[in-house]
Length: 458
Image: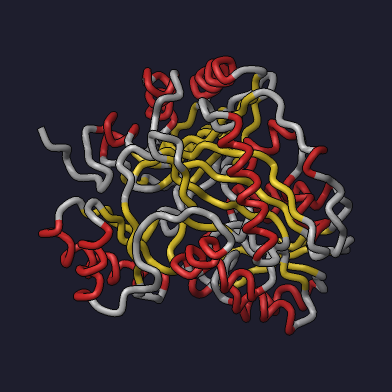
């Protein structure tokens, strides 16, 4: 096992990784920007290194600074968490070139799956169903129009290098297509440095279900069940749960088997997620693979009892999977609510600032992953995620009730501060969510908007 791991990330995931390392007896190195000088991970990790000013391009995306911090502290491996450099094949290669283990898939696998349109074709070649759409990135607006007409409206335009719900637009009418195509390409260039986009048929009444996989460097791969991530706003997940409710057992079994087949076909190593959309008839379609730990990984941990970050560390250290598929058992139900420092009454505008007081939920089978504390100043230039509240219970209804109780205990104060906790309570109370009849349109329906965030037609 590694002697020391550098955590190339910030926020709650940095602390989550450090905790897993501590339980395995691994020393940790935190990195931080000037903007994060009072971050909780600085005090929790064994060492901390300043890597640059606030903007991510000059700190958390600065490969040279991160590698130098790892050299200075004699780290054996680098854990990228999620976001930032976690799915950058160049960073994986840079780690290897500097004799440091990148805790994630090999660079070639990240390259293969990181380009979303290419991943669709790779998975289609292994037999996984994919949505109708383009077989490659669009070469011109004119070509995109032709393929959109062939696919049929509505379509969704997606950035090839996209992720985290960013760089995509739903187009319902051909008259809007060229405008939205150009806007998405421009947004993709600004966000990811890559303007290429591709098209898929858009399913207005779809469920978003993903499969958690683990693979080792010895050709073994398993899945750890399914998660439902259908509660979304503008393609950003808000509530996740495991197992996926109201899904026929044979469909869940086939999805798990297909995800494992896809992982084996591309030589996947580490923890990853294969994401699918299901239509109202429970026909499912592969949409993308995420080559990293997911924000929502705790719900899988709660129902399986398996520490996914520790599994990542063991696999990266060369260990064989210690589990077979028949060893994985799911028990009960778990939910996760993402608490963002945003104001739902002001179109979910971020409201960073100083936290004067913070009271977190507690009690039986309640877990809170956060980097917040009283006195902490939430930076304005990073993601607004403050905490993840996770609950477990023997049944889904009981897990929801426990989550409602937990959210009622979440209290925060500070100048101009607001969170999404109360709004999430509204989601949990929705009749279609309670009955597990919800889809990706639930939040837009609650808000009276379209999936694109515009006011819904009367």
